[in-house]
Length: 213
Image: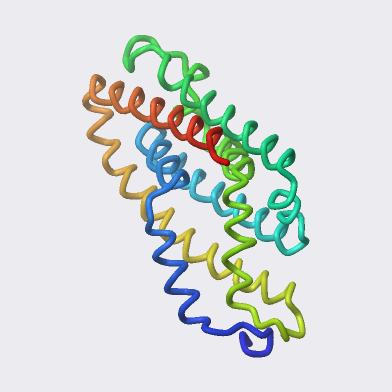
């Protein structure tokens, strides 16, 4: 199947994709943070939001939309700043909410919201990161032969492979962090410290994204 699509070194692509997924990044921190503060359902929702964001990036890159981000400094800057602002917004809400156990309003903290909130917030975080779009545009074509009879299908096949391995790792992260949350629920002070730390991390990630050239 891969040969018919003009895909070469497929095994190397899978290995590279697994290693890249294991490398800690913005999505890893997001899933761990939401799982630790929101529980298993929220963590799984966060894993699937990364999946959805990656699907959108794959389709956009296959359609050539990511080329716009790579060639237009204005488009790249606009998307980058929107993503940075949203990350910093999520971080500030975690950082400045009242301590756990102090009558916290569930609506006041995004990390303790519904899985749907975690899903929608994570999709926006992933989609509004232009570096992810450029990654798909730069990485996937390296494994597609210039003489491929169907470059778009080959691109989509590689994207689906990368997304599948990434989803497995994201679910592992979500389940592991959710188990740790049981301890945090019994120790409100530690839970509050985790909330503050994750909020600060989101703000740092947002600032780093905004600084990206």
